[in-house]
Length: 281
Image (tube, rainbow, N blue to C red; front, side, top):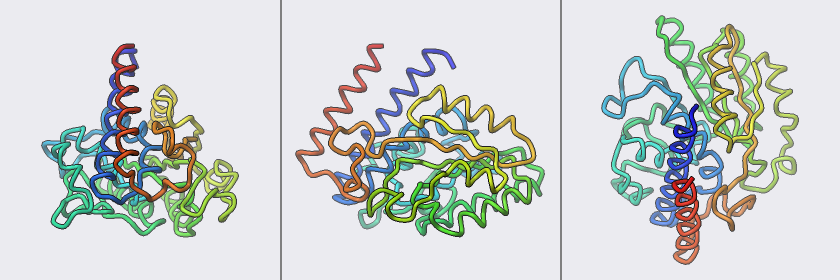
């Protein structure tokens, strides 16, 4: 990608993070930590990688995205809003009665949401089913799914991996947000899933390890995933939970807690300065 394209992605990632803080502050609840850690991936998928059209969110030949770690809906909603699926101002209605933006994604209500998710471990199975259906129907589309590293402690995830390998789903890209934290603390202290890459390789997937905050590495991984044939790809991205907001970074307590008024102002100030720095590049 060109320097100008990378700069635009960096600006959009800042805006996505600001939307996450805006939404969770307005709701006084939600999951900012794991939404912030995946901001670059959300941004790359929706602004560069995926074949999508905000004006036709149900287009039959569009690429699909399944947020398997459905609690990080604020991140998905923010990128959808910034991409033009609905007004950015609507982010302030997160989790409110009558809002299209509930605590977990709802494909029946929210433009751009391809699968209702929330129960951890199940989204990746739905994504594998979508990928197989596309193969059966002869559709040239790709399916992307984002999992948490705590989520992969769920057994259903590995059933989905067996399924995806068995059916040769090279149109499926499984992305693991390895921020090392879940609601109860370090993943290694809860149910240790390490070594993560080796586990996915053992299930027959093409595995790519990256820094999930580096757009160049994300882009290279996506290129390699598209070039891989006959087997699905797993991208294991190392990230920092709460990335971009100093007091949230690498803190398990921000898994599912909203910022208060003072924290909101500090977070938005930090992110606003980051955006200014990128714009000045």
